[in-house]
Image (cartoon, rainbow, N blue to C red; front, top):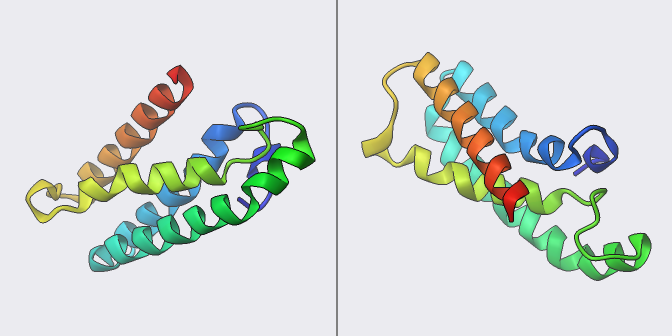
Length: 115
């Protein structure tokens, strides 16, 4: 994810931020209808990159799931955020949206770390 895996501390957290930042930006710009398509596009691109460069990354860093490779966190966070945008679950205000995004980010990071 554009070098985010080289940032410290917690490179996985840095790799999880792009979907949250994208959603936050679209919500702040009052472009709610673009969030789901944007997340789906980000998810698909992230998954393609994981598949295309997975073996290369393992060889380059000499191990599976190297901390420097965080595109899987981008894909995982994108997938995690998608249910927030089901119309029945739509928060009422921009503040509620941002709180929901922050909560989803924190829960994703906790569960990803525990795995």
